[in-house]
Image (spheres, rainbow, N blue to C red):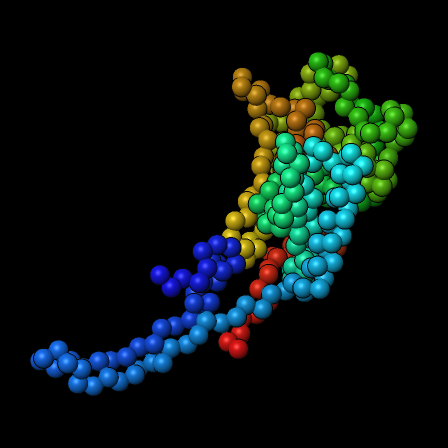
Length: 298
């Protein structure tokens, strides 16, 4: 067995890393003795992978991540955290510049290096998705660039705590899209979801939304890569995890649809988040991340 790699980058690029075997034509006589041996191909050593990651920058990112997470744990705020992760990419090319991670066992609090968690662990990321929610609502037509002010009114559903933002009820009478993003309004995002679902709502009564509300919102998120594999040249990437759309009786989980709108339901990987934020940074281009910059024979 002359395989070079059995996992991750080495497995993905096995065909160029392992090189080529020599080939020799041998002529055998009647007495099984070699009469002549002619070299047809002398063989070729495997190629080298030149990565996009700069080792000095990678070390700085790893140290910053470790110091930050250690500080959080020392302050007693990270005991239930799965870990800390960081990844950097050039938003205009997709070149991965650094990738680091630390996974914490919440039972033993043991820390392990886990850079691959960037592509194979998924998290509920919260308010970071709100930009995609607003852009989806613009595409859906429930708001426009010039008309996007909404009342900042909490949502009251039966048998459920009031659905509101983190700040106190009544802090804002109304918000436009830019202001809602600035103050991270959950209420604004939930009303966008309700409008996309052609809602029938009155306080303390059951909310009705169109049955396609989950697929509609996820479709807008997918345009930025949220909920989809990015295609990075590193085996082991997962697509994340979608929450249920219906309960065991087949009823639409309308409350969960509202939670989805402000990032509190589906799970995404950090590489997906990176692709999404980069698409905003580069004015709308969804770049495929990559780690192998070039392949050389020297």
